[in-house]
Image (cartoon, rainbow, N blue to C red):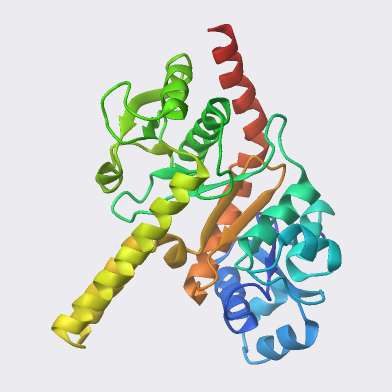
Length: 340
């Protein structure tokens, strides 16, 4: 995939079988992403199913799309590690393997989150001191650049681990969103200093000794107010916040439709509210932090435009050298804390 590509074109492996809709969404998304420019796509999946969908599209973009065969997909309810061992030729494993082999610079999957994380962890490895990669990114559309980390991967995090997340989130904020000195905050039950459980209090003391722009604690109602570019919490809290935000957004959309009926104006309003409260589904997904390779983990219900957006995120992560910069940033912040 790297050979013969025009200059500036980044090869991305896309798990074509992942997500709720498989090739019916992933193939058009690949075409959309290639048409926009900057990427070539390796569609990883069942060759017959992927080719059938490709044949429905008559576009010159297909010259930058190829098919890599795989066998089956891993379902969301499966045990990820066991499923990968049982089927190493599953689409997400082959997609991650394409990156490992140098055939792609990043992989994108809308399939099983656990399987995507497991594949990236096993094939790429994690950075020193990182046991498991972390999921993070903007989840509230009213603060579209606020990176919240972790969103569900690490459920019981030690303070030093949360500091690592702060460093990785700050790096993403600088490289991907262009904030030169991003504000870092801890998600807690009160904004006053000293509020929170033992984990939050200990993490706050560590963050104070670093050069990160730590602004203290914030509360959940602060998340839509854009008071920090990086918000740190363990995966248990982050996942609860994520799912509450998404569920509340869906309930509000249903309520508006029930109260105001079906019209273009109502539909536009509902679409906007949904995009602001279900941001990961609307945008496709975000990167896996702390692994030695670029992996974009997306939402199973993602639309064509959302998957294309996730491919765009993968391109940006590669272009900005985020993966390569992680180790140096972690070493810098850890040394500051150790000295302090």
